Image 1: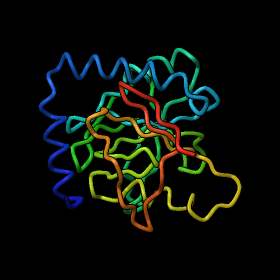
Image 2 (image 1 turned 135 degrees about the vertical axis):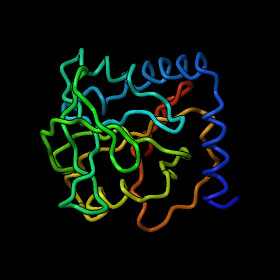
Image 3 (image 1 turned 180 degrees about the vertical axis):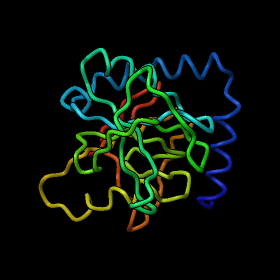
Image 4 (image 1 turned 60 degrees about the vertical axis):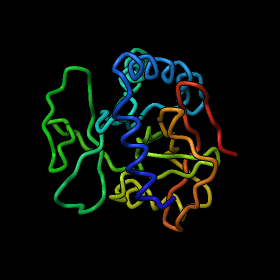
Length: 193
């Protein structure tokens, strides 16, 4: 199956999940993820707001806010084409939609990707080895490409959030793909070695 066909199939599957099932999965995923040492040790954490049927990170974000963590959302900025920056995000912040229809904070306290400790990434498909297929725009891979060059200081760490139905046996990575350090689903926490 090609990446494009796999993308279409899984996006359709996750969009057709009944609301109650999706909400229960999001709660269970949050329970799995909050135990991971990467999450426990991180202070500046990037996340996303669910769209296109993605698993909802809000139950996990509620836990992170209550634990005193700083949360950031990806934003598109005119001075950094094709790469993401990150804006501080609190529960009641005003949001506006970017050119892709994805909500972003209106007030922008921006930080560079390298200033983050952890990134909770959306994805379309993953395998237990930490490979992911995203939406196809390449924003996360371009933004975090610097991680491929580093020998030591390997922050931020990358944790994918997904439904178990998005798991594949094996995904053939491209040389530009930035691998995940872990994946949290409603059923399991996969730690990549």
